[in-house]
Figure: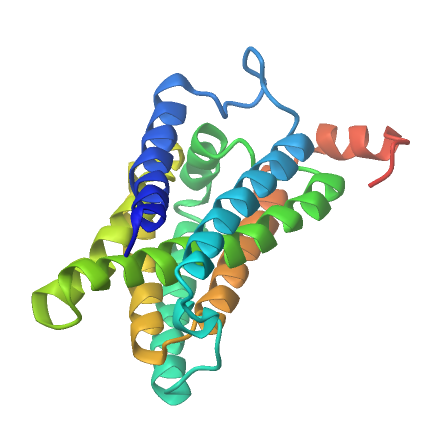
Length: 245
């Protein structure tokens, strides 16, 4: 590991989580607040930021003459084991989602989402543009926080026992802290999600399965946001908007 690796690791492992905390403290993502960014612009700006960060990680990797396969951009080595872990994750994720949307909790969930994730789409146009961010996040965040950061820590700490546990857990915590603006409950769930994704990467040596799961989770979140937060007024405004997608 060289200086470029160190710089990228600090950037995505410390700076980005700190910015996520700052956003939460200052309410920079609060819809309708002073200086609020329109959601469509927010999706594209966030996507561009992810692509730039991901490119930095990939360039640092290539500069050290390491093959992209070792970054996780290869076919899974043990696809069966990875598929089992993915299936368990999906069962737990869908069970939690069903619980959050149960008749007894749906209003509390709606209020929490409005407060913590006002960037969720409320119109069909916003939903369509949000898929750009879903795609960027599922690819770029997996490369950064699973492929690059786990490999970086394994290079520093080792690949067995407690060292491997730390190499998977620390990026998971950093990834969750980068999403602090979504609220404490979401951070806890994101840590668990990231640990499972990290385990899939370690077991299979590949990011493709975790990228697919990441896309599914984020896409479901956007679709549920459109369904749960979309108001008649928002849909009427969309119908009158002649700007197109």
